[in-house]
Image (cartoon, rainbow, N blue to C red; front, side, top):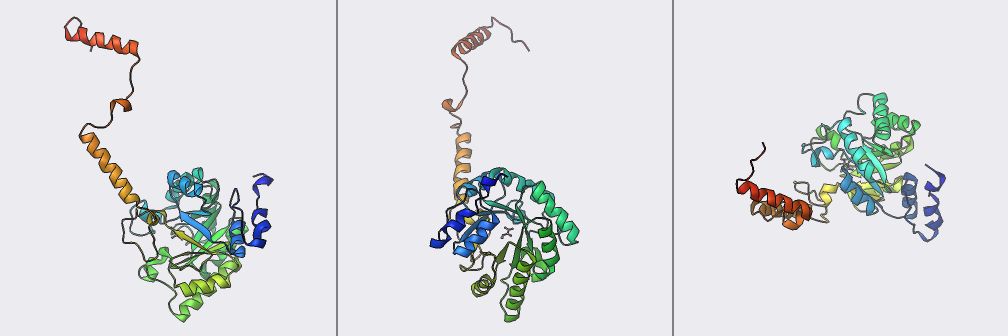
Length: 313
Ligand code: KIV
């Protein structure tokens, strides 16, 4: 990367009037500066080239190749089974599309749980083979050593606390977390400890608004909420939830900004009907011979028809 790509001055120069010029390439430092100047951070998941292009071209700040792909892309009923190789496959596709946003890869269940060394090797793969600019790991204080080692290895880390889907069995389902004073204290301590260990950002998922507000105020690094209310420094949604393509009852925090299911259904059914009625493709949608070859072929067909020529088989 050449010097002109480092555009960190963009935000600093404008922070006096609390407005920022969108940078040509967003970095984690830009996102931290956004928190400082009070500008909301926008984030979405993406799992393939086409949607990642649309998300990036819309100017979304951060794109996460989330392990939620296990559910919305692979049709599994939890995130637990997706592998590092499967996540890498999608990360590479998204990498080819993303020019501007910060690209984050989610470390899947089992890729950092057995040992810190294994976690670092897997994270290195996401950077080297997937082109990720940061990795996300779920969990609180039990991840401190991992976060420190990743930062030592020059890999920026996004923390993720609250409703952490990889802990579905420990949590006994996908329930809102942080509802007692004790749980709030634990979550706050987890978040502060992860920041001190070197995390660059913190995802807060499925916690009461008041708790997210408290953690956001305690942390210097930005918080990105999903089901954590409007007081976080930014918001993230699963792309398929945004466009009604999840085939599940939407959670309370999901807002549909479009109806891709309806759009796709109309297109698929229209195609099916046109093919069934020979209305697709039309002559205008077909390739044609040049006049000379067409006339020669017509003549040949006539002679064949008249029995003047034998068909060569
Ligand atoms: O996997 C995912 O999509 C996530 C987001 C919900 C933050 O972790």
